[in-house]
Image 1 (cartoon, rainbow, N blue to C red):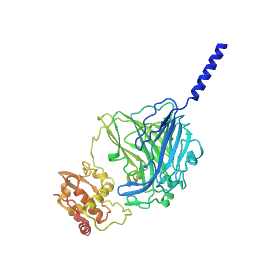
Image 2 (cartoon, rainbow, N blue to C red):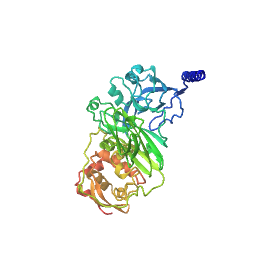
Image 3 (tube, one colour):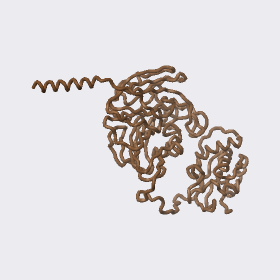
Image 4 (cartoon, one colour):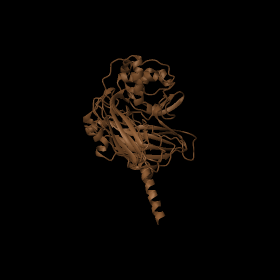
Length: 475
């Protein structure tokens, strides 16, 4: 009995000594989207020091469109923060001296008044410090909560913090940080220049832009995330809002597991689209079986194709024709008829009446990406049997008047381009004379075409002629 009592006492002393051992201290690794800090491998809690600076910076929202973002860490979204369940987080928030507004931070992972907002209110040129215990594992949104709260969030002040559970989630090959949000600007979508925030539009909850990772194209083209066939990918998806719920979808893939609302249990499997509430998150995992470009969208689909909520995952590796065959047949389907369609005009900024050739090339590049890229593709290569190429195009180089007429009046019927037949419908584009002159000048000077310049006067003359003069002709 005596020996058993001493043994129990010894165990108690050992536990007490371990409990009193000081935590190790480390500085948090912070990453900007789409990157995620490496997984935490230690098995004990630590004191983790997080240092974040708030800045107000002018950056690109879309091609030709700038915006004054209020940021955590100089970018939108703010940095991805990764800690471990049980960690003591010492948070330092500094507000840059050039800021015009006070800022703070509300971390949804914090148990305490305002999620830390009450302790982190920081005026320009000052720093604040507070600490919290990372008690609850999961993926959490953080945001500024200084009045007016909606305006601070709408201007870009949000990000994600992952409290990694003590029992780690299954290992994956790649992890990415994707955060949706919306922007409300005085000008319409694509209106050029420095656009101010519109409180009126924010209150109506009808944004001009809905984007991933802070701007149109932040996850597309050269900014696309990447992976290889056979790899497993985990997406940490957040929604900064401030207003809209996201219907998050990856075209061409099924989410093998979804941790809904940022929890750490994979509570759904084989999911096509998952809802991510404003101020909420989700974790989505999937294994890649075939190569190609997979498109991330908010499946409230006009947000994707008309407001910017679109991204790309480019997957490399061998084909597997048992999983996906590619095209096996090509038939024509014209159930909607062959009438020439007209694209409605959007409100446009006041443009100069003339431009130099170099100004037209830059302006035309932006117009091409906004209006033509989906059909004619990024390098003007077109889509076989559907949309003719603009690269090294004999149709473009032969007759400027006819080319202008196609853009002004639209086109239907069979044409021959580079010795290949095409028979589809080109809608009439509601662009100004200068816009048409600019985009065609850009096309004529790109992708191996012969060069030259289209003028507004040329477009005006074609516009004054009957539309029949622009129907296709063999050449």
